[in-house]
Image (cartoon, rainbow, N blue to C red):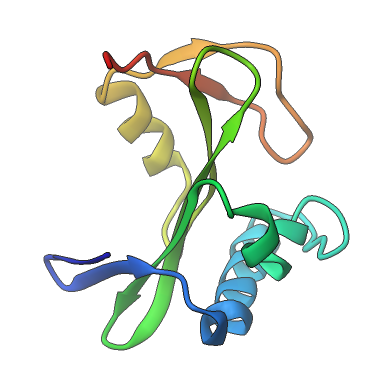
Length: 126
């Protein structure tokens, strides 16, 4: 996938993106006082090929620089459900919450962690 949006390009992650994506996510986590966990919560960024065999991982570029990431992968919770993961941008994450809420996602409970205190779900007709 290679999709332009305004001054951004959203494209499939490639192995050469590993370090830049990890740096981006680490920077955003640091901005929120959270730590980069390459052997824990962030192992899927270090091992994208393993963790997203089913699913997808994208990067967002602006002027040739990775400024965002997004991914999803199937989960067992729910029928044909996927979890949206690694949604990071070099912008305030509160904007992401507004985006979810204005796009029809509904608050949910059950998967909150110290790094992710909000959970949303959306049923998509098949």
